[in-house]
Image 1 (tube, rainbow, N blue to C red):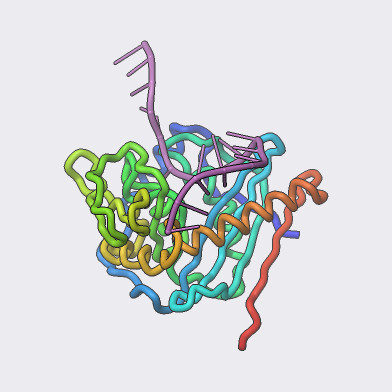
Image 2 (tube, protein in one colour):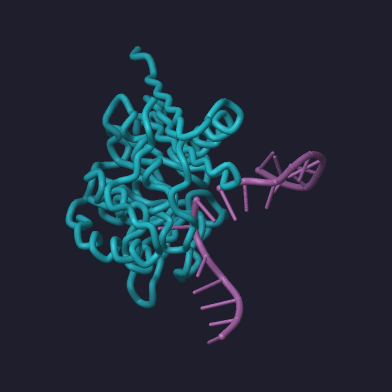
Length: 247
DNA sequence: GCGACAG
DNA sequence: ATCTTGTCGC
């Protein structure tokens, strides 16, 4: 039984958390294009909560980027370590996500997470934070524009418009399905914005949200259900890992 | 001061 | 995020 640990020096207050963001944001690598789309592996991460039972469940699902078939997956269940505060989402999600990533039987390749990277009040959202802590290339694909503004992209899939913080482009509003509300893509770490957009399109052949996000969402919800039912007394933790059979 | 605000 | 059934549409 392994414990979902919290990184050393994890903040206990909002003030400390903002200070951590201010200190770490300088480590975001913005000069790399990142891996090419539809090649190698892409991993989706997501987290589900049961605040009443103080439970959090994270999932990491590795897909073959070309076929979008599941290659491997892992989950981790633990205690909620931070409340949801707009701008501080990373402190709520990252401990469990790191635990799930650690349990993968193979390298994750590019990581796709729910939420934002550089599109953030202090330019250090979840995707950037996760990237800096792991060194992995990471992008963020969010379902809502947060506090940012954008012009409506053309109705066709593939159309996009700048996501703006004032006049600064912090991400892209990207149409992944004809006539459907766009998703909001931003750079996390070690990936360019254009490449992040290309990856997002490669991951959305059928649905508005990336296959990575859909798979990880379904898996972490299932892990949470099972944890809420099964015996999870005291500080006991559950973890599972699975690898697709090589064919 | 008030409201908005990724998940 | 989460509470929640059926239902309209491709």
